[in-house]
Amino acid sequence: MKQPDKQQRPADDTPEWQTFFKTQVKLFWEQHVISEYFTAFDGIQLHYAYYQHSAEAPLVVIAPGRIESALKYEELFLELAQQGFSVAALDHRGQGLSARLTQNPHQGHVENFNDFVRDFADFSDQLTRLLGTVPKTLFSHSMGGTIATIYCATYQHPYRKLILSAPMFSIETGAVPYWLARGVVAVGAWLNRYVAKPWYFFGMGDYQAVPFSDNVLTHSQQRYQAFRSAYDNMTEMQLGGPTFNWLYEAVSAAMKAQKLANDISIPVLLFQAGNDKVVSASGQKKVLEMVTRDDFKYEKIEGAYHELMMEADKFRQPVLDAIIQETRELANV
Image (cartoon, rainbow, N blue to C red; front, top):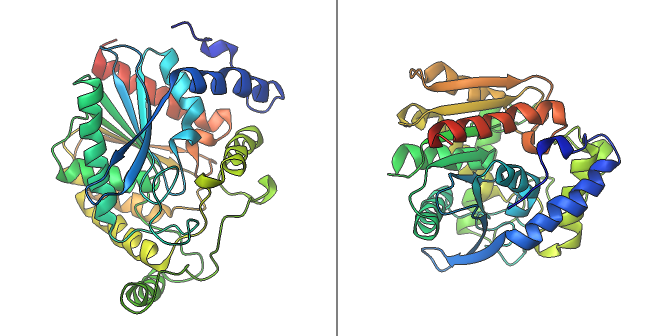
C-alpha cells in the first residue's frame, strides 16, 4: 500500500499540519483501520482497532493511558504503517469506546486494577489468533505502562520488546505528602466499595474541554486540537476525572509495578517526560534504581510534557524513532 513518506509530513507548528491530519491521517484511518469488539472475562464489551500491513509484518501493540482510546493514536498508526508494520490498540475497560463501569459514563472507574491486566492478556491472545505469531513490540503509555509492566512480569506473553512512555509508576500528588494522599484515597475507596456508589475524587467531575493554554499534556497546539476535536465530536469517548476506587487501585498497582519491573524477561526501554506534571518521576526513579538487567534502558526527554506521542515534534520524534528501530531490530525487516 502506497503511503506518503515521512518527509511529506509538515511540522506540527505549521498550519499545514492540520491539512495533513485531515487528508492523510484521517483518510488512512477511515479506509484501512478496522474497529472491532470482544467480550472480556466478565462480559464487558471492549473495543479495539487494528491495521494489518501484511501476513508477515511485525506488529506494534499499543496500551493507551487513562481516558485514551485507540483513536488518539491515529497519527502513530499511519506512521507505523508507512514503515511496513501492523498496528493494534485496545480501549481499556471504562474508557474510549469500551463499555463503562458506572451509571455515570464520565467517571473514570475500575473495580480492580488486575481487570485491566487480564483484559490486556485476553486482547493479546485475540491478536495472536487474528494476526498470527508475527514479532510483536508492546508500546505503552502512562496507565498503560503500569498495565504492561504487571502483564509482562506475570503472564506468558508474545512480546519481544516493551517500550514504556511516561509510565505511571507513581502518581503526582502536588503539595500533599504521598502517604497522606494514599490514606485519604484508601478511606474514600472503602466507602465507595462498601457504603455508597462510586463517586469522584475530590475536585474531579464530568468531562470538560480544557483550553490549550491551560493544558499540561503537550506543547503541540495542533496535535492537542486534533485529539480534543475527536473527544468533542464523539461524546461517547468523553471521560471525566477518576473515582476514589480508581485512584486507590492505581496507586496500589503503581507500587506493584515498581516491584515487578525487574521480573520482565524481555528488553525494556523507558522514556521519562522531563517536565511531566501528570505522573510523578519518583516511581520511575525507584524502578531505575532497582533494575539490575542490562537490557532495561532509560532515556529522558528533557522539557517534554506527559503525552510524549502527542508532543511537539522535537519531543515526540525520539520516541517514534525508538518504536521503529526496536521493531525493525526484532523483526529484522
